[in-house]
Length: 243
Ligand code: SF4
Ligand code: FES
Picture 1 (cartoon, rainbow, N blue to C red):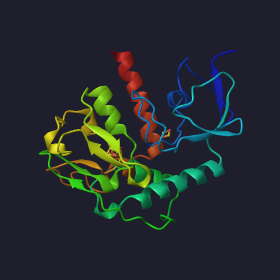
Picture 2: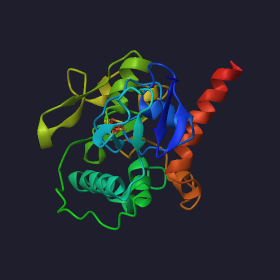
Picture 3: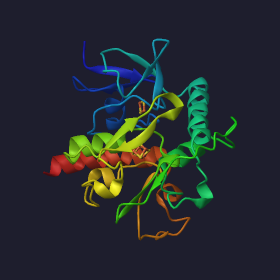
């Protein structure tokens, strides 16, 4: 059997070892995701990539592609589940977009728009977690963290540093910094690190920068989240081929 699978009836190829997400993004098909980034070990925490494979709900970012698989990605039931997941992420933190300089560049916010989310639906938690402004160049606002672990993985796998980790359990889970003081300022994180830029929301932000790109001209003002993520994978492929 050839290495192809079907996404919403469309036949696409996959390479051995690829997940459904890898194969789908390479074929230019968008599967919503927040904790996935090509090149980093899959994490499987946000569940926004939930698809149905032969009637079973699975995470597209962790399940290896298999020949002949029938994947449903675009049903109204799945979109509704994904919208609920985004609403849960919004109410669990303090995602006050009008006060956040990531607004317009934030993947969580863009996903909210993508799913037609008009409110948080659930009662907000209004957490009170520590803001760490001890680093000269970066600030960490834990109330906006969605626990995607992109910074954890980027620091470990790309920067070779392991600056971040997740501590606590259940609703008390929060991002921690691996230093004796627990402060970002005592870590060896630098602005050049991948972990300094990878946060998809406004939890890790550069200091000493204001709103430099006007609202209305920001990433997701100009491109839907669908286009941006698929384009990113296309760009990476071109770079690989050019090397
Ligand atoms: S700080 Fe940002 S990148 Fe790190 S886990 Fe939280 S949301 Fe994800
Ligand atoms: S992208 Fe698959 S679980 Fe987050």
